[in-house]
Image (tube, rainbow, N blue to C red; front, side):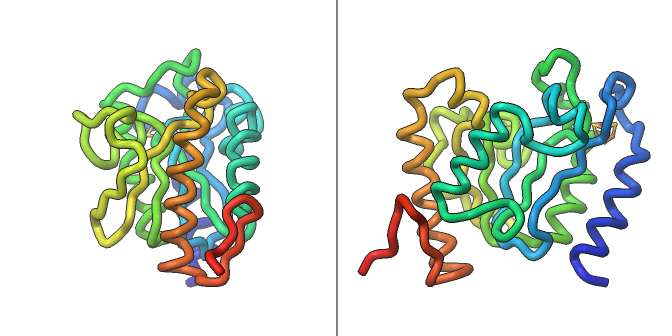
Length: 201
Ligand code: SF4
């Protein structure tokens, strides 16, 4: 089976999940979306109101900012990246998911990562970093520093929703994403171009 077929199969099983209480108030299980052959994956926290309404990840204001960040990197979700969340159902009122909820949803995320097998993972915000790397980590301390784990390169940076609340952090986030572009050029596509971060001549 192709990666796309495996993802479709996994999605249909995740959509019937009721492993934690988040499903009770969610309109949709938001599986994730993007390029099934992507070597680059972005992981956020969980669906917000718009994502829950439409059943797609990162489609509200934070998602629009993520798309602009991708565009600045010379990328889009159809051709370069796959977009996921730690939990697939919206926490009521956009609260942070409980550790028990992220643990319940973890097998789905592991299944996605095992199919996609990305070389580079961008961890968007504290929940992704704590859930996937270390519960004791603080995003403000570890952002911008590569972590090597499970044969992948993990880059923690701010969640786009945090950037909307704190625009002054955008400079640091762009510096983190430039490191991601560098790594993408090294590991995936040496000819990758970015409108705001040209290849060294
Ligand atoms: S958040 Fe994850 S574990 Fe909880 S019901 Fe939704 S898909 Fe299942």
